[in-house]
Length: 326
Image 1: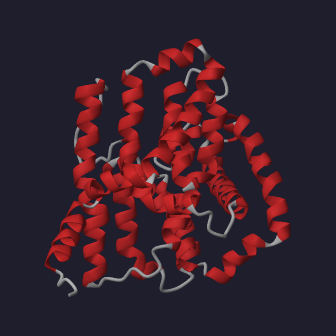
Image 2: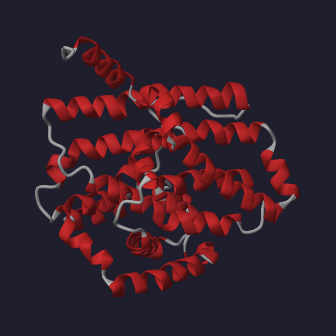
Image 3: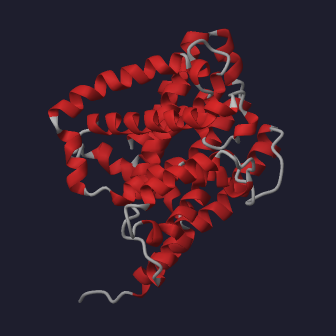
């Protein structure tokens, strides 16, 4: 729930690009929250195999939502909001939709990647080489660039993550995140914001070829440290309603973009430009509130059938044919 909320905040920051401090907030979040999200996705993908049940689940929970929401968000942006988004659909994922297709591809290679720990150092090499790609087709640069975080999630076990509860780890987490916050103030001095997205080819970055590989590796290490620092500060015990809302990740992810683009249509960027500090604060608070709203039980129940329509239909059919007790 923490990570998907940060996804909403990160995307909402696009509404306040002209405000003071927005670039720092954006860079700080993007330095580690995508690596953390990918790591958790890998950790939760350990059981995936090429069997019928899991392949069916992959189609229901990732492929179908991608096929449905990719054009839905595209045409909403193009026809309603009036943005100059361009084709092609599905081949080049638009805005937030990239994670669905990339996660689907990671899941498909999971049975291979989890066979041996040597795939972890190999994935780092693949990630560094991924910057040589300069295409948006199926977001291959992100598939390659973020691969080490996914593979790490596949190979770390619960006993490894228990160390995040160690006192010294939690004590070190705070200065680590503070240090990353300081680094975010000077992102363009030692790297480029585009490197944090893992989708920009080296040829498009104003960084010398002699140090681009080193810079990419530094960004990866900072992302990893930030991810573990943040996760160590999140309580392991259940937080009741907040933990329950974390199971509505897909609802939050698929629908928040429509609300953010609606805010753009209604002129929110103009307000934030006129009131920079207030605009930034309200945007961040509004993004947090939006994530909470979408994950709340009533909204989740209403929208969840749209995120997995085939699964919902199948569940309803089984419920209607199930024998009733006397």
